[in-house]
Length: 259
Ligand SMILES: Nc1ncnc2c1ncn2[C@@H]1O[C@H](COP(=O)(O)OP(=O)(O)OP(=O)(O)O)[C@@H](O)[C@H]1O
Image (cartoon, rainbow, N blue to C red; front, side):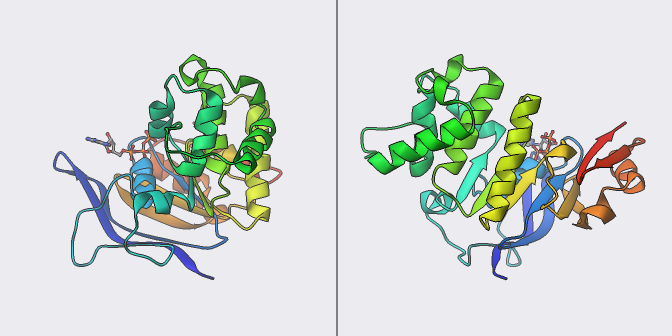
């Protein structure tokens, strides 16, 4: 198996605090990982380091090797990634039409610009993907007039149209209603069958489809546990990490947790 993401000793500091603290993390092709942990644990920061939205501090021990390369032109890197995150949703909250945001996934841009040349094949693909997510009827609606759940589904379209090798999903199900979550999980299953790699950061354990077998737990900028789902999604371990009595239930391979 090929190592597609390799981070070694990555630290990110903000205002004298290490929000990512000497983290080493690797992912192999066709392996899926769910990242969980309390609010402020550093999950989004880790995802942003992987997508090169932010950079770790330089040290002689720090490494970030993505798809076998240490240096990337960021737009080229993003061709390999399908990203859904709160920060991208914020950027997409614009007067662009939903369709323009979805198709801009081909260019790793937010919406279209005069230099983007769209092909008929791309137009057809966007229609197929938007229909799959049940948002084709919203194609001409402005992003800033969509509900947050509708906008999130457009972002999922944008992240998938270019058929990336890795899906980086940070709280991707936020604001999705129950049927949309079900359909989102089916999409994750499809990505798994297509041999894609799924990395998701979430508070919603039901997002973790059975094919995702590895769970990474973060707390205070560090990885505090990394292992198989059955060994990690345990009430004692989660209660310790979250500092509260956490109850865990499993049904048909899907988990839920509550306090
Ligand atoms: N630009 C910034 N300046 C200062 N602190 C920041 C900045 N960005 C993030 N942080 C802090 O870094 C910590 C980690 O944030 P991050 O968003 O990675 O956590 P998270 O695990 O994704 O949290 P959540 O589950 O709430 O989304 C938080 O305490 C946050 O307040």
